[in-house]
Length: 102
Image (cartoon, rainbow, N blue to C red; front, top):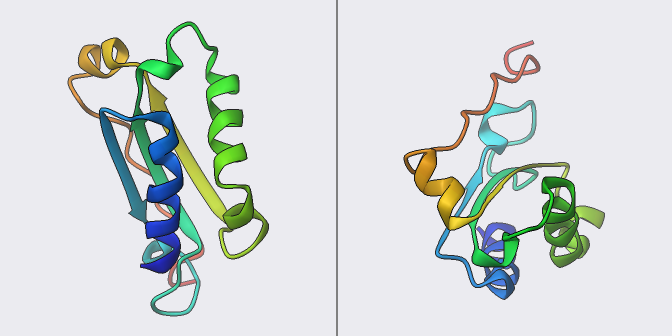
């Protein structure tokens, strides 16, 4: 949980109204207890008027050290509070990893 906690801490810079960092490593062909694959859902008013690609870039910049090290994959779901409300507080599910059990 060390890498997950680091990501959660760094994303506090976005002053999120909702933040969920999910370790999805278990669904991939990696050793047990890995912290390599994450899904991030972050809702922040700081995303107002910012295109999705720029939101992703903001997040990548905040977690650059983790992306340069242990994190292999990072699925991002950044929303404004209005977008999050329109979605009913849900984000897409991650697809099944084809490498599991292969």
